[in-house]
Image (cartoon, rainbow, N blue to C red; front, side, top):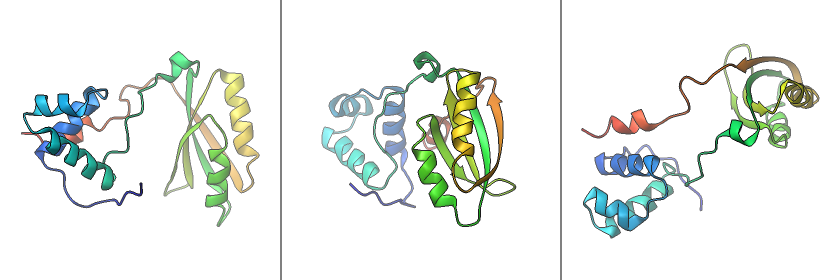
Length: 161
């Protein structure tokens, strides 16, 4: 299903529903309706709308990458050749350890988050990235810890009085 990004603001019930699912993603529609004090059909309609506008993209499990053997997280900035962003992005997508990439302003063109199993594995992944046609220069930093993991909960909590 195609989603259309929306500028339509979320209301308090949307936020409460998303907070509930953020905390307990395995809850069913009936249990959500019970906890929120609204009809099952209301919850289902809200979920359908949140998916349609692109606010809710699914319910993937929250995986701990170190527990899966990927103990290193690194951030790599890439300077790429003029007009090569799409080709570089397509090639990076084929490298399994690349978790995400963002087009950026400033000295770098792309910011890439990647994971590796060891320093040697990190070197292998960086070598793969350097070999991508259109990559002119890279700079890598290794994350030592994650004091603030990826989060959206505080943004949703603002909508709930």
